[in-house]
Length: 168
Image (tube, rainbow, N blue to C red; front, top):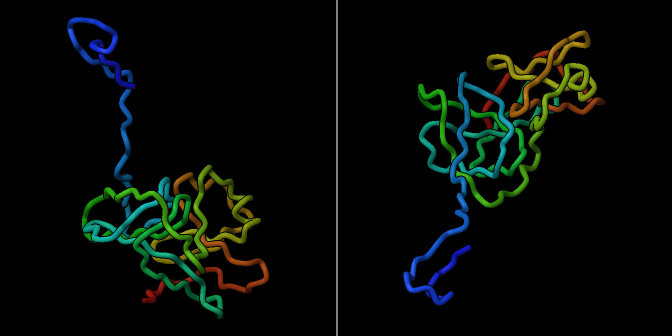
């Protein structure tokens, strides 16, 4: 809040500030590889970003490939694939108030670390190089918070690895 000593009948007429609100305007994303999965911490706008592009992912009907579709605005907590455009290993992306849900996106954002057994139960595929690989029944370890996985419906018979392809 703001106080003004003049209002309190003090002769020095000084003013004081009790607090300052700092609003974060960009989220820094890590880009160690050309393709990276990511779970957004805020709603983000990738429009005009020179370092990174964002994509949703959807498995084809045959269960053999994943189509990536570029998106420009991503809601908080969404899973996306980030494609590094140059050599930068980090990029700043503008934060926005909100963004529409990403229809038909099969990527799920990971807000807290997920154990391998949880990923198996979700019929999850993780990105390895430029392929989505099914998490094996006997897998160990965890998928870190801030990443994403491809969620394939249990009734879909998908290949063990799924190649990437670009849509519109």
